[in-house]
Structures are given as structure tokens and as C-alpha cells.
Length: 157
Image 1 (cartoon, helix red, strand yellow):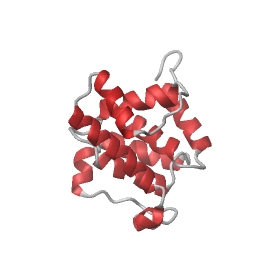
Image 2 (image 1 turned 90 degrees about the vertical axis):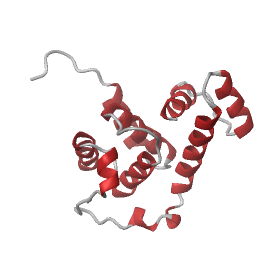
Image 3 (image 1 turned 30 degrees about the vertical axis):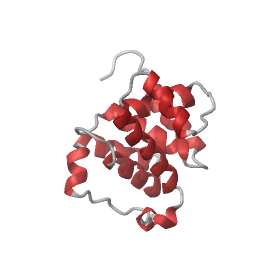
């Protein structure tokens, strides 16, 4: 399912091609690209739920975090997010790429993905997808893009 999300994001967002969310047409295109119908359905539901998260009144916990509060992860979240990933989310909050609400949206979307724990690179892509889909986060999205695509120069110590 994650491969489908990446395909859609890279095809439509990164190439700036307009995504018209006609479910049937999109399903046909993804089938032609070689993805399984079951995974396509799950990916499209994932995208629809991401759009629903923008209406934060449906998810009251998105607005519950106070500044300088500490996020305690549930055991199931700890299974999906390793220490490095949790540290990266905290880093993104500290540099104000993520707010408490967008962090919770990222965690919500991660928990809905199938499979093993996500790699740090996969987490970065989920953050990009969330920030892209939440109005008013253009600057944060731009910062996150820089973090994802930045190639370090020279030696790192």
C-alpha cells in the first residue's frame, strides 16, 4: 500500500500534474501500473481519511496538545515507530515543521499503514504527504522537502 501512496505522490504532487480524485479512473490507472486491487483500495481509503483529518472537530485529540507538552506513545505506536523515528518527529516539532496537530495527523496515518515498522525515509514521505494536504502549511512543507531531498556535501563528522 505504501508503494501506491508513493507512486501517487511522486506522479501527481512532485510532477505538479493535477490529481482529479475520480476513484474509478484512478483505480484503473493504478491497475495498469501493476498494483493489486486490494492494495489500491486501501491506499485510496488512506488518502480519503487524510483529507478527513483536516476537519479536526472529528478528531478532538488533534487540538488537545499544549505547547511544551510531552507526547507519550502507546505500545502499538512504539511497534510502528522506532526510537529514531520518534526522535525525528520531536526534531520536526522543535524546528516548527510540525505542530502538535500535524504530528498527530502523521502518527494517525502511520498507524493506518500496513506492514512492518516504517523506515525513517518512509516516515519523511508520510510527513510530506500530510503537510501537503493540510492548508496553511506551505512553509513547513517546503522545509520538509529540503530535509528529504537535501544531499549533504563534504564529510560529515
